[in-house]
Amino acid sequence: MQAEPLISVVIVCWNSAEYLPRCLDSLSAQTFQNFEVILVDNNSNDHGLDEVQRLHPRLNLRIKKLDRNHGFAAANNIGARLARGLWLALLNPDAFPASDWLAALSQAAAQLGEKHFFASRQIQAETRALLDGEGDIYHVSGLVWRRNYNFPVYEAGAPIRVFSACGATAFYSRQDFLAVGGFDEDYFAYLEDVDLGFRLRLRGSDCIFVPQAVVYHIGSASSGKASDFAIYHGHRNLVWTYFKDMPGLLFWLYLPLHLAMNLFFILFFSLQGRGRVILRAKWDALLGLPSILRKREQAQGPGRAALSILHSAMSRNWLEPLMVSRQRKKFVE
Image (cartoon, rainbow, N blue to C red; front, side):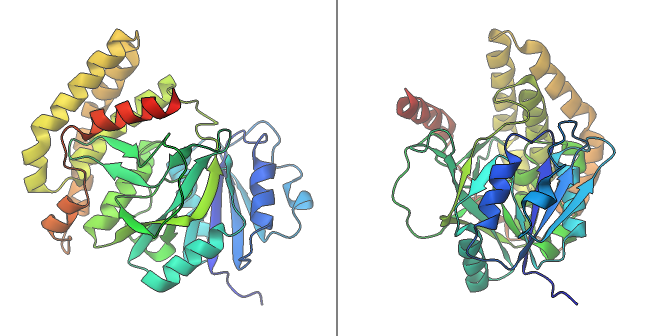
């Protein structure tokens, strides 16, 4: 009988034939080999999985084909339920890990234990002088951004705490992932990783960015950067995450700032001629609040982490979103 792997790598595909072979080649080259790969296909029509098992015989590979596009969140949950590993490594098909990616993550997990989850160092695959992110930052307004996105690559240092892990290259205890219900499937895509990270934090977990765990990431290969799809789901889910996860005292303290942030983006996208998509996102966010508030009861249940610990994990500088935006523009101009 085959021993259970330590790590289950879950890859959700949707018309990913252009990138998937390179992703699987990178996994075949891993120095750490005690892992399985679970491909969950969201009803692709590009035949990208036709030759996968023949072309990658070294991989312990399983494929789950879905009857429709269930979304990124639900498909990852399906993969997590199929997984046999102690740890879940989520990997996008347009993300290409360095050969020691799993070795670095498994070493960090062995040192720190299961009450942690881990973020990788993402470098832009097409512009390797720039970072694609180093975990997520959650601002008290409810705004979210990837740490050091579009900043120049610098010499990696020691692991540090971040708020949450980008779902394109995240590493979770499978037990903890399933215990909180995995990703919220109503999100479909975007910010499901931040919401999950918030709920894990509410249960006392901590997120660690591991700079030695490097992945080269294209990003938004399926939906497109700043597409209507990304704006709609991202800005709808921003509201849902705040209303579901922000603890009571902090919820009321920062609610005016959250409302101001939403009004700013409504104005911002409207001036760009994209008012319809941002207004639809915010309207659907409001329509979904009754369901989100029912989920809040579970997220904010007994055993919640101390308010001071949760507050300290967030960005509290009211001007930081503006400063980060200006710095990113400086580095890419």
